[in-house]
Image (cartoon, rainbow, N blue to C red; front, side):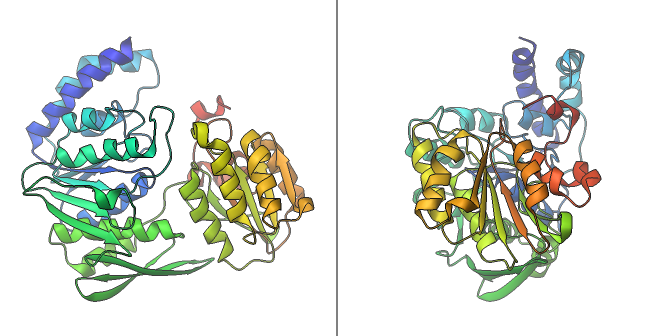
Length: 418
């Protein structure tokens, strides 16, 4: 009841804060990559403007979005919620000197985008992609696409739509008349993704922008970073930011915790930590990174993918098939990964003796602690609830005391959860 009252009051407080300050809203949605894109877009805009963007994870909901706009965090107890209810209208009246506010807008169920855009009407709307995730409340991927597309219809007059030209659903999305549309991707002529080259130290990311070939060096790995950067470039050029400034900003980009971060492991190994979450698209991307990196042995620590509903068996089998030839050892966590992914990997060419399945990440971590050798590279990837492969990562880190600084979900509230 308290949270419901807070949601209503926060909605109106956020609207007051926007009206009071008059900053432009950049709204980012998509099935994957929202947090990294928000970070990259904020860095680019900050080269020329003052920018407000929340630092924490999960601030893309009916509670989280207003909290960013009034610059508060999620309360930890009942008294914190009561304080928020009483004082958020006053916090909304505070004068804040920002030109832009960059927001993630999640869509876990129909109506989410419409609700969030009622709070913060976007001046720049970004749709990163549409994939088969969060299917509990949606009947089909087409329904997810329709929900994401609503962000475009809410654009302010004279606004900008930034769309992924490579995703089959986003490239079909239509912007209202009077809206500038900029696309990014391999199939775009505006911000064209060319290629990525990488090793254990980082990546070189190549683009063609305004008839210029540019390269952005980064500590980030994976094809998804090409799209994150391309999107940020598109936002930057829409706001007349010089290309050299955009390159400078993105070369300072650091991936969020649990998103393909390179961590030193025990016994001279290397960990590619992608433990924040997992879905079919991000799982394939991570495995492609593992395939293309040099290692004595390549170990894939893969947890089950949640929220796939009727597609659970199909999608886990697809990942198992995709895995063929990309690693030497497979370690799985969770029932779906054991039941569907592991057998499919064997059918695709993995040796059955090289596949090891565990119920929990702690069990998998205990196995890896003894199994890892010098020169190994371990990719860690899995969903959040009841999987949480970051627990295994902590067990095989060279410096586990650094876990609060480099791993996701290390707070006290997470210690109580499975």
